[in-house]
Length: 181
Image (cartoon, rainbow, N blue to C red; front, top):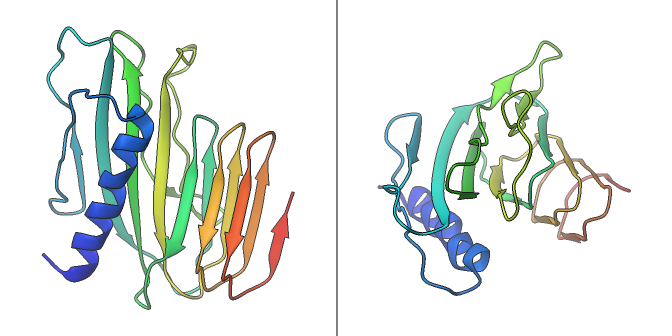
């Protein structure tokens, strides 16, 4: 495992205790296998299931990264010089709730889009959420949207456009134009 992959895995795993507020819950520590890995712990008597998803994709030079997460926080960090984006997600879902799907895609407008969604007609359950950590390569513009979630962008080397309806924002050491709303 490369140093970058180890860092990425540790960074994503660090979100689990934050989500769980320090309480002991079943945890899954899935590893990246191939292009993506998803691991869910077996269903237990616990009311909340915490799971993790990791994804790595190669981008075209200068391809924009769009993150639209209405269900939680977004943390973006500098991801290196290769045109590779890494996405690490930690999901917290009550037993029996509809699963939040996360399938990053390149959209018709050419953007690489990370937009977790519930199935059509499903409603978010309390305390259901998905928090994302994204490693953004140099030279790729970043656009992030949340509803109530925190947006935390640190060290990104490209233009950053962020907007949250009601969540906090933190920007540090950005090397590019910034638009925040």
